[in-house]
Length: 195
Image (cartoon, rainbow, N blue to C red):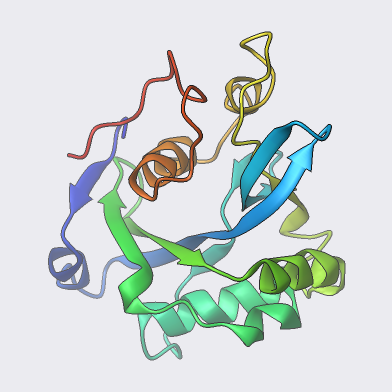
């Protein structure tokens, strides 16, 4: 991930009090839907349009009153996604990676949580009533996991958007590692290598 250095979780947690921790989560669910009756969706993967016009994952900074990274992440999910986020909990077992960038003393922790389609639909339905909707979060968006026949529409076009920090690389790495992509949907795309 360009400009970011990967850390083990223990190393990240041992950095000390001068560091802030931010946690974000990719939320996904199996989706049996078909686009135009012929393109299988396979999975629904959520991202959000942020206040700065860039795409990112729900989450945010862990506060001093949070007893763990996951407590902070789950609090942020409720603030950004609404009460439907209280129906599930992102746990340490959902943890994927930690990175530090060249900027201020911030460690970014990334998680991926598999939901049921019903849970994901409830998050989407309630997101406009969340505390941070219209402020920090301008709306949710699903990631198209397919490539249309023209070879451009779908995921390749989606990836041309502006992403915050390492979100684009985190997305591609998670999609590949979790087996969420249909064959051929990433031909020609550069999947980040684990560092």
